[in-house]
Amino acid sequence: MSTFTITRAQLMDPSQGLNELSDIIIEDGVISKISKAGSTEPSSHQFDAQNTLLLPGLIDLSCHINSIVSETRAAARGGVSLLCTQPNSKPIVDTPADVSSIQQASDQANNSQILPLGALTQGLEGDQLANMVSLKQAGCIALSNARAPIKNALVLRRIMEYAKTHDILIMLTAEDHDLSANGKMHEGPTANRLGLAGIAEVAETTALAQQILLVELTGCRVHFSQISCARSVEMIKAAQDKGLPISADVAIANLLYSDCDVNGFDSTFHVQPPLRSEQDRKALLAGINDGILAICSNHQARDIAAKKAPFAAAEPGMSTLDSWLSMMLTLVAKGELELNSMINACSILPAKILGLEAGLKEQQQANLVIVDQAADVCFGADDLASIGKNNPVLGEPLKGKVCLTLSYGCEVFRA
Image 1 (cartoon, helix red, strand yellow):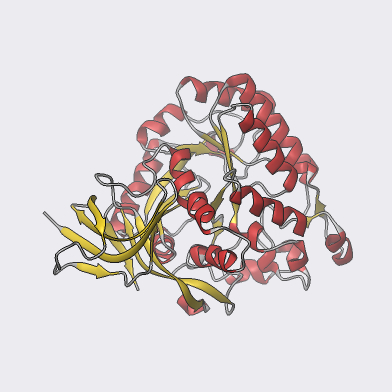
Image 2: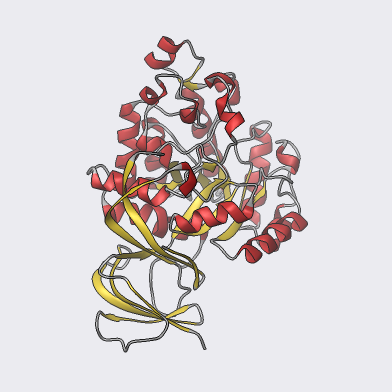
């Protein structure tokens, strides 16, 4: 039996109201005992947390990866225990064989573990349903069409009806592609000044309204990924208050930045969904503090050439896995995000959405992260494990240094 002991850790788990200095014993990857600090006998295999924060391991509800080894290593360095990978990889994840290939690669990488998302439609083309039951049986935690459009509302209704019958969680992005066509950033004064085609909020809210109505019709469990505006938060809250089986998340970029950051045509800030107004950013933060929204990384590693093109021609996306936890803790340090709400949004709520064990409890898998909340960090390109250097915080001072990450009881990162 392998035993690993963590001593003097400030354990925080808002799902249980825990905030106390603790020792934790992990046996064969399972938390066997949580006790007051100092009550555990010294062990040859232990980690002294030295009063730093011990949190339930981060669960990333949406990231895009092609290189499993480098990106799962980046996730481990960023405090992520489990990450949901979108099916728009190469090859597209629309068969059980594709799922098996990802799982094997994840196991061999021995970093943060992947929870694969399968494709809702064949080839993500939006018209023919994928073999949804086979994908679930193969190990997909949920099904998604990434940001690829679904052909029409009738196809989406059939997807929801089928998913409801087989109790499959589906993840949707709310976007009317006719309304957002050719848009490059949020429609507003900044886009007008820069001469860039805008994407109006209605491109999101129109699609979201239709999707919520279809949830009401079918009873399907739906998670809305990467909402970006204040009106969407209101709509999600209203639907949840009606008892509809829906949840939602927001990408870290939309919490840190607004459309004003696009000034200067910096293609780092070319993302999907687009960075919205400052009012929207504050409403999204309020949605997290109110427990309505989860947070995802929406990680997309891009090569240098893809981001060196002019803003309108550059590939959208940010590389955020390495710095995800530090980015969130910086918002906490600024007073914009409550610490308990942050933990809920990136760990407790995602676990509940996916039907996994939430929080830190005895007799469950040891998914956890230890982070020095007060430590100053600054990432350079050479510090990133991700192959994508399109990270918006390079050279910027942040708060929070990840000290240790465990995924399913395995130590996947130690500073």
